[in-house]
Image (tube, rainbow, N blue to C red; front, top):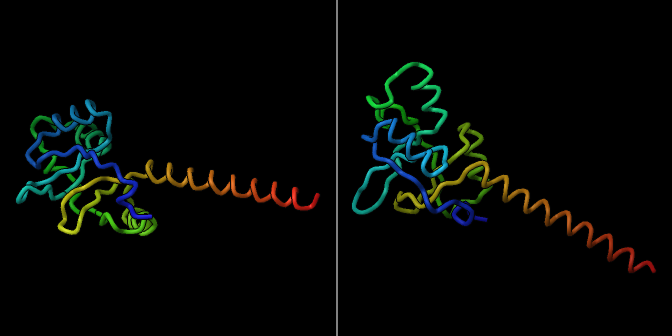
Length: 149
């Protein structure tokens, strides 16, 4: 399965000049835990970084910094881990684990932002797959019982 098949295609973005306070309001409005910092380039959204609700709480609020004076460009993760939309889900999971991230932007061949995948998405897919395996085992046991009658 490709990561592009399971990613969320509606991604909330902000420019690097967006204030931290505005980003926090956007997160609240959309009930999300992150915004992807992007720049527009020839009609494409190129991901530059990510800012999470945790970044805002730990890095700004807890240190008494002014969220209206800082921009998301000031606090975004410097090294952004991304995955290509045609990449295998398990390869993306490995990269997320290696980088220690819970969310990862998904890009197309030109580097354009096309989605985001989170650990929640992956757990949901894994739960579905495990459920299918449990049904397979039950069905196999039922067929075996019927064959022995």
